[in-house]
Length: 106
Image (cartoon, rainbow, N blue to C red; front, side, top):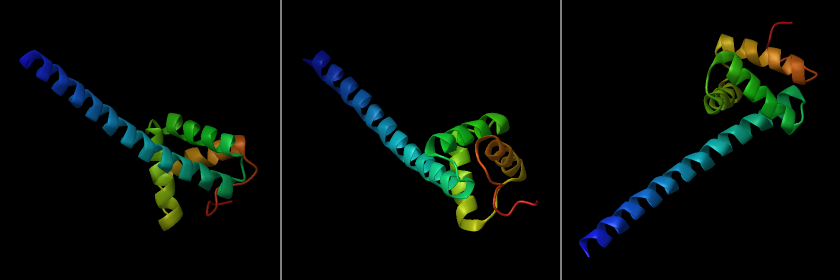
């Protein structure tokens, strides 16, 4: 019966790890969705284009997409964003959208 207890304990640990991963995924998804919304509002792009913009910025800055999304949300609240992210964002929006990043030099 000890073996069964270990098996159950292992299964519980596996399930807890899976729950933790799902919680993280849901939180990450919310952050990314909010950043896509900002791209739609500021860049006048479609949600699909907003997703492409985020991926593009992530790839060109070598920063994880979730972290890019977080930086964009901070930018929306405070108005500051790292220069390399701003440059990549401007480039991506030039490719996908009709406008310049608000606050950027003309």
